[in-house]
Image (cartoon, rainbow, N blue to C red; front, side):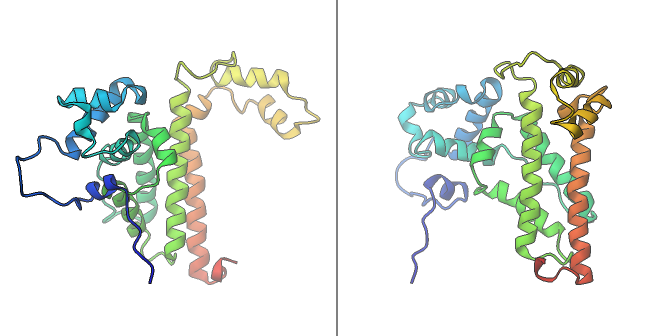
Length: 253
């Protein structure tokens, strides 16, 4: 008989599963206060400003007092990643495609509002109740569409990954620490590529650049580009749903 795998203590606390002691004075702190203070610091200073000492100072305790609630900075980041996420939009009454577009945009907007969340979201799978509620709501929006559980999870992963990638591109395009290759916006980038590309080695890309594919737009930071990519993804989901409904793609083959 396999033993149930234990969860990190901070995850147990996120789910309210920490045993409550009936003895002694009521604790001055809780995980919500600590995570909220850390989020305030991160919003103002970035992740570089978040430490056990800085958070302890913000809530008015010694740093050692935090270890009862978060055992390390990594655990603190896990808590921050869940507390900072708003409640997901309600799928009730919305067509599945409209909801998936709203869901993906909301994911991206949260990341852009809190850019420090980007590296955490890239490395930390959702374990907290708030982030998993987002996943639950997307799966619910796909109920009755003929997709199995694994396919629904894959749709969620693809859309969340797209929101994360787009937010990272938008955020880093304005970051002062990003290496500047000496080109500015999309127009300058297009001109630089036009001077670099050999039409024989890069025939398709060279033709697109010379035709003005990067001219007159903000390139990777334009919301129209985000919408275009999102529509491609949703078209793919719609095609998958249609194949499942027709029975032409049984078993994913």
